[in-house]
Amino acid sequence: MNTIARICIVVLFTIFCHTGVLAGSQSGDEIHFAPDQIVTLAKKIERQIAARGAQVAIISRVGRAPNKLPNGMEFTHVAFAVYSKITTTDGRILPGYAMYNLYQDNDKPNTSALFQDYPLDYYASTYALKAGVIIPKPELQQRLLQVIFSDTYASLHNPRYSAIANPNNTQFQNCTEFVLDVINAAIYQTGDKRQIKANIKAYFEPQPVEISPFRLWLGSIFIPDIAISDHTGPVKTTTFWSIARYMQGQEIADEVFTVSVE
Amino acid sequence: MMKRQLSRELLVVVTTIILIWGGQLEAQAGGSVQNSSRALEHSLRAVTYSSVVSMQLVFGAAAIPLGVSAELGKVSGEMSDALWEVANTPIDEPFPIADEAIMIGPPPARALENEGDKP
Image (cartoon, rainbow over all chains, first blue to last red; front, top):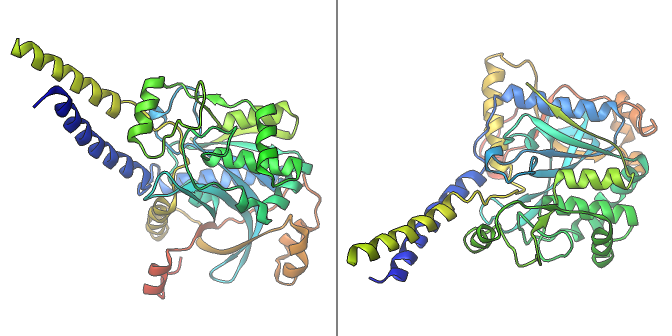
């Protein structure tokens, strides 16, 4: 057997094993903290947002093991929290926040779908008892509501998922880019993706992904939710903190803070 | 000669495995939630039954934003007093939050199978 054939067999075996590992981590079957800790975190975040009278906030979670994240990546998932009246299955009407977000598909990690759930669902699989919060300016909150509850919201979703999607184009999208697109649709009151992307390119600074190009290339071959074909030059993507810097820099955020539970 | 070639091949193979497996290429991902949400629900039921946590678990059936003015007229008749106040409160004023732990309901198949499967 020649060298190339041997390498191919081992690589295929490795891919097989690695895919299994990924699938295990993505199925999200596990919770990583005691249930009361997760409830405490979710409720603490809700109360802190509500105390500020925010009808819409942008909140983040740590959705991957922190030691597996590249340098500079703290939170992995971002979504909108919308103050709502929640009708429960036992017929009561309760005040709280509902989450509006893009989730990666469990079975097909290179695709995504839009979901509405609640903070407790959102933090069920968190890897850290902390969250980042952005409170948009009241005027932006109103515009965000108008987008989230319009047809524009779904029209901004691109189901082709890449964990390191380039926010400057529409080739792939991840949860953070979707949030950024919705924010820009709200700011400019448009559903025109070309205009949204042009404005993002002009004003938003994505975060560099600190992984060597060779490893990213390998990842793009073997890992379904990693794509680099949408990038030219250094790979940069949208993160919670890059959105926070953008919103603070453009003076469209009232406050940015973190919430944690011991 | 043969030994040297084998060593070289072994080195390439091991390097490849390390690069792929240990590459930490998960980067950042949106993650998914449905199964972990259900896992948390089961755990919450367990701790609630054992009285470790004194909160009530409820399933949210529908969420209507208070900030969307067009909705207010439709829902005002069934709103609690607290919510009605919020609906008429300017943005930036503190809002009430329910003490209950609200989650999405079980998957449809499970809901059909277990008529009495309520929080």
